[in-house]
Amino acid sequence: MFELEHGLIGLGDSSDDVFDSGIENLERLFSDLGAKQIRERLKLNATVHHAPDKDALSWHQTLLSDDR
Figure 1 (tube, helix red, strand yellow):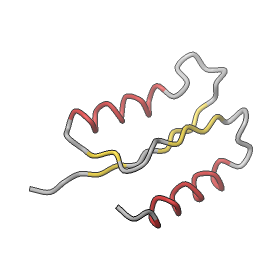
Figure 2 (tube, helix red, strand yellow; figure 1 turned 30 degrees about the horizontal axis):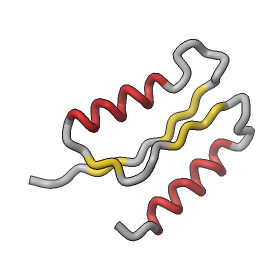
Figure 3 (tube, one colour; figure 1 turned 90 degrees about the vertical axis):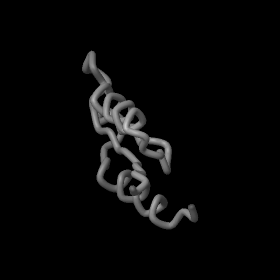
């Protein structure tokens, strides 16, 4: 058996009633499946983060460089 690890990035718009609910549901599902969270999820708000791709890339590069 293998260990499942995850790090999640969510992009949404805080003016939406269900802002970030999709990524929260995925995080809960992964947890229910026994997956280990290896980094706090990144929540990007499209109304604030005008370059979400750059923020996500920075988060991802940090994830890859972390010693686990």
